Length: 305
Length: 141
Image (cartoon, rainbow over all chains, first blue to last red; front, top):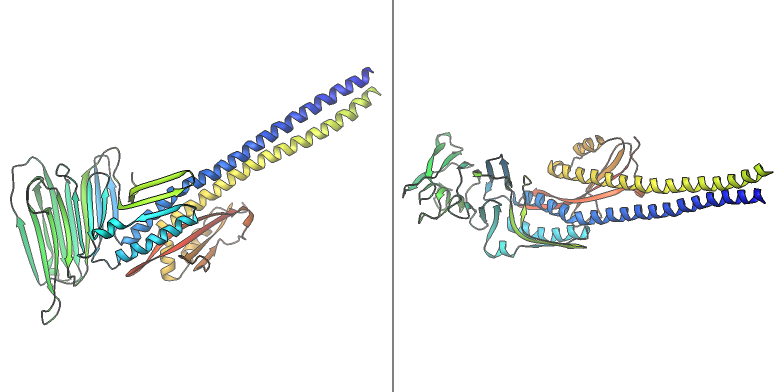
């Protein structure tokens, strides 16, 4: 009797331990499965972020322009380079990309909508930095205009380099001078070259930051022997509105009735802060999916900040 | 007699116990390993897709109709990771423009992680969209 009782006690203890381990393992396994499900959910929730980054990289190629930011603690150099007129049909490509992006989103279970109404309604493709600099690309007049959003924010330097594939027939330099005493100045420099080595033109100096001063280089090119078509290109720097002293200092580059392509790069040196500087295009974008709604007015195409 | 009763009882119990312990640890560790592996493969595929797009390798390969640089890139992946890169013209994702698979790898569909990205290829005045599919699965280290 004693022997049987001892054997029973041992086996009961062993089975109790086994049962405990079994139940513990079941619980642990269920927990791990839940972790796996959570990992899947996280993956789904990261889809909008991955998609937004994908859209940003696509936009860089789609526009044909290169936007970059080179920053340090105190300053950020915002550079915009490309060609005007662009070799790409920006408006048509944007429209096509609208449906491409929707398709791309649906592959990731993300409802994606790019609202291009603003871009199409006013004929400009807008962009900005997160530190008060805006630019607009005019589809029809092949004009890029970059300027701060208010007169209290001014660049430390504006640097423009332009190359024309066709030499000009005449160059006009127009200086709008209406200076006021000012405590703030910014540096500027313009370098122009074309296929005629004698046409290289460089100018640089200081502008008061709150005046209506401007500098315009206007190049006229006659395209054929009978002078029936004239193309005009213009580089303007300073107060590009031309009136008043409270307007921001910016730059434009345009090629009306273009007879050839201008290759340009414009660099604005701006004050920076601890938040960093980033730049992107203004496109109202909505991403919808399980457990997330993302709405943004700007697709940031630089990833510095 | 007394020892015999204990031995049979205990042996059977211990055997059951060991079986349960083994099954338990196997189940727990396999779930954990599988989770880590899936995550690692997915993250690797995501990074590879970003690299391929940002470096313009894919766009150049489509323009030049030459996949040598992509093959060189994926052959440089770690031995423990196999994979392939497939490019489709959007929106037709049924007819690949090209498929490049890492040398020495055979598709393991049971453990494959797939990441899709779009990328643009300029063809003035148009810009055409393509979709790349980066697939990764465990290789033999």
